[in-house]
Every structure is written in C-alpha cells, then in structure tokens.
Image 1 (cartoon, chains in turn orange, green):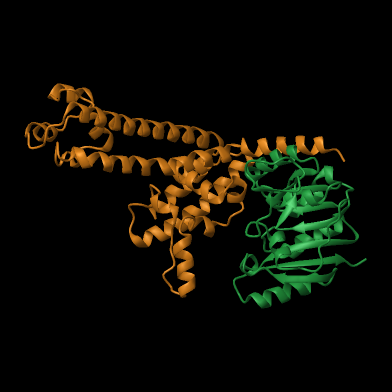
Image 2 (cartoon, chains in turn blue, brown):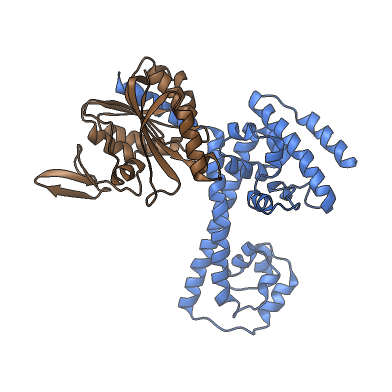
Length: 250
Length: 202
C-alpha cells in the first residue's frame, strides 16, 4: 500500500472533473442567478431618495439609463444625447422642478451608490459573455436547439453533462417544473405541467396554450438528440434546423 | 461523547483537556455512528489495527474520529463528489492513516489501486436506493472472511412508504449473505434511519 499514489491519483482526478467545461458553466451560471437580485434590491433602495427628486422618471428609462442620468453634473439635451438617451419626456420631467434639492454630501453618497449598481451590471454582462463563449464552443448542437441561456440553466439543475445526457426527453421537458409536477402527482389531479424551463424558449413563448405543450414535447426530443451528438463530437445543426422548421410550419 | 485526539488541536473542533490527554467532542447530531453509540449498542467491531473501508465519507467528519480509534490501521475513504473530496484530501494530509479514493461506490472494482486489498470492516453511509446491493458487491470484493460491516440505512431514500415494512424487507435481503448481530433506530438524532451491524457468513 502506498498512500502517495492514492493522493496523487485523487488530486489529478479532482482537477480533471472540476476543470471540465460543464462544471465551469455551472459555476458561472450559479453566480449569474444571484447578481440580478442584488441589482434590483439596490435599485429599489436608490429610488427611495431619487423618486423625490425626479418623480415618474423610472417609467421612461431602463435601470442602466436611469443610473447614468445621476452621474451627470448638468442635465441638458446634449449631455443626455451623449449617454444615449433621446426620449424628450426625460427632459420635461427634469425641467419641471417639482422635486427637492439635495445637499452636496447627499449627492456624493448617491453618486457612489449609482456607480456600484453600474459596476454590478457590467460584471453581469461579462459573466454572460463568458458563459456564452464556453457553452457554444463545447456544446454547439445543444445551444443551437435550446438557446444558450436555457442550456446553462438545464446544466445547473442536472449537475453535469453526463447526467443530463442520460435523462429521457420527458424529464427534460419538465426540467424546472419539479414543484408543480410533484404537487399534481400528490393530489392525483389531471392538471400536470407541460413545460418547465422551455417556457422561455424563443419558439414557444408566443404560441397559443395548446401549441406550447406540443412544441415543448417536440423540442425536448430534439434536445436529447443534440446533447448526444455533442458528446460524440458530431455536428447535426443543419438536420435539426430542417426538422424544427418543418414542424413549425405544420 | 469524546474521543482521544491523535493530531494537535484544530481550530474548528471543540477540545477538552483531561489529565494532559487531549480529547475531542463527537457530535451525535452530525455523525450516525456516534448516534448509534449514544443509543447504547452492545457490539461495536473496531480494534486498533483494523483496516477499514468507509463508503460515503463526504468531508470526513466521522472518518476523523474513526482514524483516532484505529491507531495502527488504515482507513480508505470513498466518495463521488469532487467538492467534498477537496476538503477530505486536506484532512488526509494531516492524518497519516487516512487514504482518499475518488470513485463511485458502485464501480469500486474498476479502481486499479484497490486491487487485492482486503479489509476487516466496511462502514457504509451512502443514501442510495440500492444501498444493500452496494454493500453486497463491495463485501464480495474487499471483505475478509468473517469480516464485519456497519450499515446506516436511510429508509426515505428507498421509498416514502411505511418505515417498518421497508426495514423488514431490506434486512431479509441482507440475511442471505450476512449474519446480523445488532440493529437500532436512531430516532432522536436522525429521523427514519436505522443502523445495522453484522458479520459475513463464511
């Protein structure tokens, strides 16, 4: 018995498993699930103060644009154009002069808070890009059929690509809807869920309720084929594209 | 319950000093083997020079206490998860009689380095549907004749039905190859768990 051999082998096995692309994608997308919550909470906190300065401004702008307005020293149509805001309503709200005036020290605090929110949203973008590059490089067929975002979320629930590849298509169809499925089984009701994560798929989201269930069933079958093609290193993108477009025409 | 400590006191563990001998506190809420001892089992098959195969070691909480009990022996800790194995490897570097094995407990026969190794005791703590099968398979491969086993059975992993029926069923399966010496429910510490101690029929 040689303990050193065991230690060496386990450490190399550990690194092989943790450095594999599916584990990296899972780690990144787990972080990605948490960042938007933080941004929204901070944004709500910011609005407690800023609503009294420029009321109803948040209806016209996205979160990032809203934050950028508070980084400006003087607000004119030209400076607004520089940060990419063309909406004329913004200028009228700013000029209406209904809100309160802040002291310089208060302005400084809000300035810092706004910068924090913008930084967080920048980090979020970087992570999204990283996950997209990794996923599309290693699993091209899977990402083509399911979409990159849904593919990453499915990997998180399954735990690894090898476990996902062993799942039947009916399981993949309901991935993400475990809670409502087990509730339906427990109550013996006929209202079982028809789709889980696939609800957000670009092809399914704007269909009628009847077609949603059908397409989810069809797509989950194609996803199973795509995952197995990725593992064996084949490229089936053209064939899958034909089949999917044929089904949609029906 | 407390056990003498082989390694100097670590910051994470609560330690007591009695007559210059260092002792460590063993928490029955975290370890099923300790819970069984606390419930008062009559037979506990561990001696100082045993070699032990521990299936499902996780981060090595229970393993570290058994390595204290087995002074001159060796303990092989088997686990599948790479994240908890990282912590176990750190523990192995600290304690000289712990050995890490990163492998599925179902496929331990394919692990080259374990070939031809025989052990005196198998401790199994993997909450799986085929727990008894895993024990049978590994006992055929690694256990010495008349070797012992400690099995902690999680009934909710097998099915959600009546606990008593499941336990009867699983023990019937066990009695084909093993002679059962002791069995006890771990009720206040772990719900719907049972610990079974037995011996291989030669």
